[in-house]
Image (cartoon, rainbow, N blue to C red):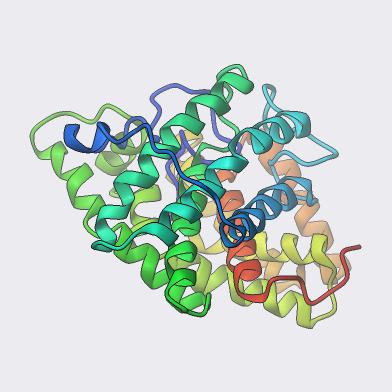
Length: 331
């Protein structure tokens, strides 16, 4: 069954910063906004957690082929961003991951209270990202979701918890408990304003909020099994990530696609991705041809599965947090 994915205006490879549904517009109450100037001292464990997510976002953008997405070889379905844009924004947001991991390590209260502190740090780095990219939305989705994951990993690491997939997901879910109701519940009294709110009103999809509140169930159910299977089949990192991306594209409601082209194109994209997986993906000639055909299709229709790309980076982050390194060589 398809699950919700990230809001279009904050997903990696998303449109420019209009109708943004981000840290700044997923706004904490006034009392929480007073804590936006968060200062933390980073320890070695927090740096290691943040490093895992920085590696993940860099590996996502550098792997190929990725239908419709930015790669080292193509700008995909975009005319306002390329690999260099992503390198600049990745460098800009990296400190956020370290700081959110440290916030998790320092947190001693109810987990639901940690989200406001993560948001406070995130607002600063979201603004920095947009300044570096001249208001181009490269990685706002992964900035939010990776920051929450870093906070969860930091919290677990301070309590002797193993950074296992299930435990990480459970802590993420606890941090984001009630997020959808708090934010979308406002729509009972006013019209939708942001991209995420419009999509919730139109399609009932909860985007990044639902994905985070679920503990990133799409990653756990589709992404990680696909990535680990690819490694077991002998694929290197780049091709394993492509296999994982196809699995994610076939299983989630990518709200970047919903925003850009609509439900019909999303369903078609999911079916094409599933067929590429069934035919072996990068492991077979037929699968490779279907991937190439899917890329051509995305370019022609200006489809960009940016939400799936974010989940690919999150999947890689989960993997590295648990395993520390890849089970295959780096080449």
